[in-house]
Every structure is written in C-alpha cells, then in structure tokens.
Image (cartoon, rainbow, N blue to C red; front, side, top):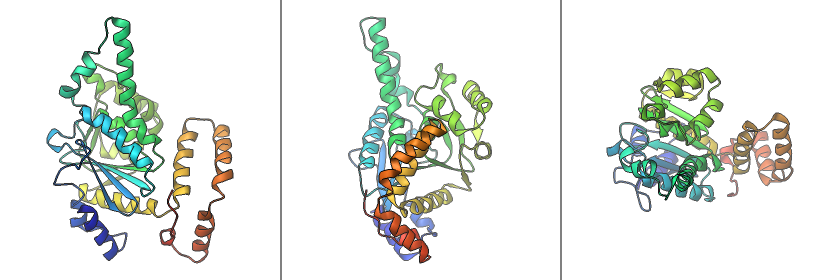
Length: 309
C-alpha cells in the first residue's frame, strides 16, 4: 500500500517535492512483512528499496533475528535488477539502541565447546557471522543511503559506517558504546570509522571514552554529509537523493561504488589499474551513448530508459 501512495505522489508532483503525508507513510504502521521480523522492506519509488529497522517498541535493538535478516535482505537486494539504490532508516523514536543484550547474551557469554580452544573457535565463528551483517551492506553493489534520527548507539555505528551516504537529523547523536559494556567493538566500527572520519585522534577519543557525538560535530567531522531539522525533512531529502541516484545508469553507479571501495583499501596505483580493468568492459555499455545523447540535448539522465542490471 505504501508503494502505491508514494508512486502516486511522485507521478503527480515534481521529483524535488515530497509532501508530509508521503514521508510519514515511510514508517510502516502495520508491522514488517514476512519473511522478516526485525526489518520492514518497501519500495517507495521506482528502483528504490527502503529497509527500515522495525522494532520500535525495543528502540530497534539488534536481536538475533536482525543479524541474520540483514544478510538475507541485502543479498536479495544485491541480486534484484529492479533495485538501483537502498534507503535505510529506523522506525519509532530513535534509529537504534544497538545490540539487544538480553536476547544476545547466550551467544556472547556462553559459547559452546568442551574446552577453551573449542569455545574460542566457536566464538570466532559467531563474531565473523555478525561481522557479515554489516559487511553485506558494503558488498552490495547498490549504493546505500542511511537516514539517522535520535540515538545511534553501538552496533548502529557499525551499521552506518558500512553505508555509502549518511544523513541525520539535528537531534541525532552517535556513540561507540562498546567499551562501556566491557568489550572492543568487533563488527566494523574500529575498521571503518577511521576511514570515514579524517581525524585519527577523534576516532580514538570516541572509541575509548564512549562519549556522545552530536549532529553538528558529526557533520563537521565528516561522519554525515547533511543534517536536517527533523525526521520528516530528512526522509524527504533522502528519498530525493535516492531518486537522483536511481535515475543514473546502473552500470555507472554500481561501478562507481565498487571502485570507490576498492580504492579506499588500496594504493592509488592499484586503484587506477583496477579501474582500467573494470572500464575496459564497462565502457562498452549502451548507457554511455544514451547519456551522451541526453547531455547534448540538455535532458536529465532521469529521462533515459536504462536497461536493468
């Protein structure tokens, strides 16, 4: 039903305009559809998939179902030719309170095994499984825009640093909480946050003190690229941005994401070589000619009918 509401609005109004009713509809009222219990997935606009953390009564805390459902969800999105961009947000009053300690305590505190070696081996399997929950976002070739409101705690920081574009509301705050519960963050924050924020000193401070970072500091440090007055304005801006991305060639967009991530983790020379190998085939797409023709005719790329990828 939500998809129908939004598509109707988008066909009636310019793409730069999204009314309050449309944006409010993005928070599902009927609960997440099958097969997910911790997520709600919808399609608010053509080629846009919205993944909503959907445990508002538990402040979107990450329970056991969440960790496996995220992997299934993003693997499905990665293979879906109808999806060109993903929007992630949280239902309810905040983005996420992080890990659901009550639900996850058994896995974390009581790993199976007859001796220390076997318990350690099983614990490593558990940790790497949980790491994949957020790595799958980074591996997904479709760009992922995350919209954060209110608190983003612990595992929430792991999640957002795996996304490609981060937006937040003025009341948002971020906290690398793990040291407060006696552990080092182990599912992505310590590896990705230093590459998102330019200051190693600031990263160390946040990770070692567990202090809160508020929206203005998040913007100035580069953790987020835009700050909005409230959730409604943020979701409207996020949808418009997603529409801009979805309107471009999927060959160009997905190739850009893949090469940006590769270049982040390799030298300039290695990145250039990878790019040359990539484009020696990808430049042979009809999308290049279609885009050039539209540019010469002073038309928007969004007017082009690109083939699915």
